Length: 153
Image (tube, rainbow, N blue to C red; front, side):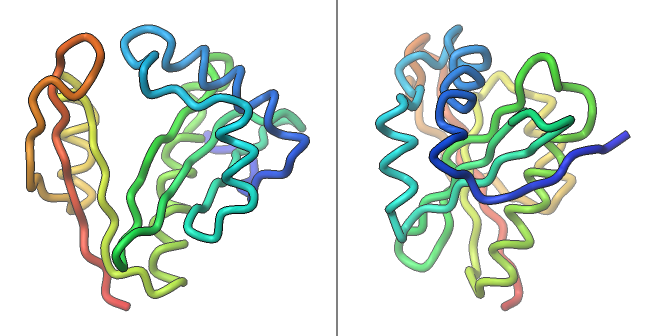
């Protein structure tokens, strides 16, 4: 069952976002983690969009986009382990797609770890196509699969 609401982040959310970042990415993605300063910088960056999922009054997850060259790059999505399995990740992902459509952003790029077969299958099901593999992208030596989807705008 999907609960919660999606909204833009506020400065009061940063500590919760950092805690989610650590809980979700410390193992295997530590070199890609965002700090409190990184999240704070996003608040004032017109080229970025950062949304959070709130469940039961608690910031439970986030999705982060960077706009570049007429496209949106899906930098990360994370849901706190305590809130996983409720559909919040799916809700955040769909919110990002709607944001792209509503803001006339024609393409959404994303990358996943080459061993994340569940996400690869899910994103293919959403209409995303693989366009590049970057070997050794992650700290543990795993490669990244880059995917994209075009939107009619």
